[in-house]
Length: 193
Image (cartoon, rainbow, N blue to C red):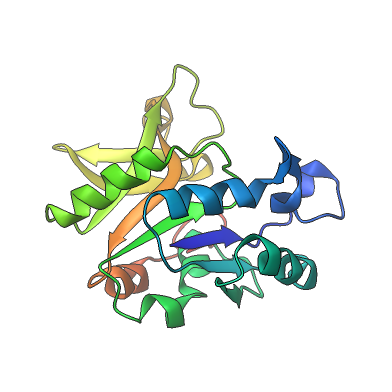
């Protein structure tokens, strides 16, 4: 599993890295680590950035066997995942990708995503439907197949009406992971991958 924990959390207005804020007695990222472990992830890679020294110390306590990778510049989700290229290239059957600031992950959702990969999917993206999708990235489908994950800033007026949103959980077949990640472009408002 790759846990993305490099964000600054600027809206939180705190010097503490966002994922280290405590929720239900544990740092936010600890809940994500536990979910990954409960879903059967034996190896963890944490991508860190903001507060890297503090994050390394916390990782030693929360997930002592986890590898840490630094994303120096934050250029999007695919860029963050690729910071852990060395871990991904070890040849795992599947790679779970989770945001470190999503503490309410149900391990069963991760298990289902892994099962879909075992059944032949190259990638699984978990989404949710909402009556108010404002602020969320949209999952754009065509014929029941995902064709794009588009941030709201990049959506057309028609795409903004889509109520199927990015839940921030992905699973990628290990044999396809690097190839798929290397194909992600940055043709969007923020220039992110």
